[in-house]
Length: 74
Image (cartoon, rainbow, N blue to C red):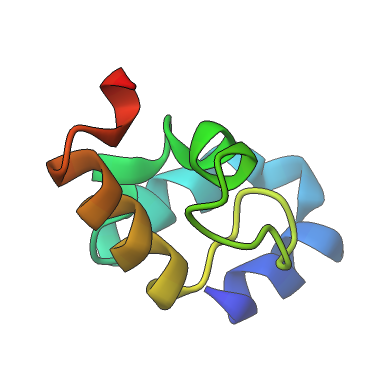
């Protein structure tokens, strides 16, 4: 994920759609949590300490647990 963030900030920034597809296909759990990251961070589920749209695997796992516990419905 960190390597993809480097690409996003460098010469490849115009290819954000390609980067998003790569994340959705190859980063475990990203597809499941991608629409919930902002709310999860605002509720303290994970610390938003990475570039926006590039959560660490531990953050993804925390959001998955939150979703499974019904966190998105609170």
